[in-house]
Image (cartoon, rainbow, N blue to C red; front, side, top):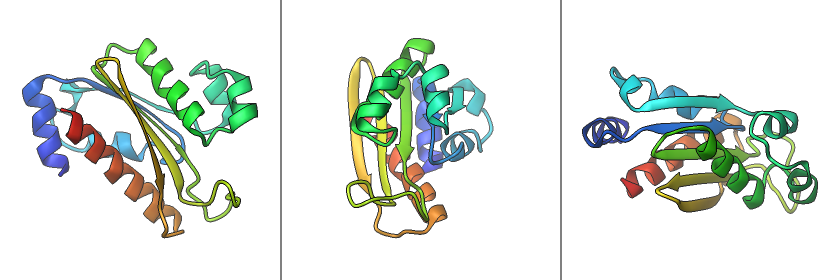
Length: 153
């Protein structure tokens, strides 16, 4: 799937930027793993802490206090603010709980939000991965993000 997406991005001259939290740069790593990725990959930020989301991405502190960093609202603000910072045609944000701890009843380990903006169209995908292993959740999140990107180009 990655090679196919890579070729589509090159062919259509579509640029992409990402901001990641729980995946810690894994999506950026996947997207830059093939030659000529520099033709489409523009930016990759890791805003792991709430403070970095507030300081770098300008996510309003009230959003994080009210809804949490792992929320539809935070994910949406992350991707919208990233799109303001870049000239990329596609912008993606990821925030979630990769575990093995840190979850709750309302926000279990495996809860991940993926935000995507293309041509002012905003998609926020809520995912709950049942497998509770950290690496599995991170890889599953990246695969889901790649599927989302592929579906809109």
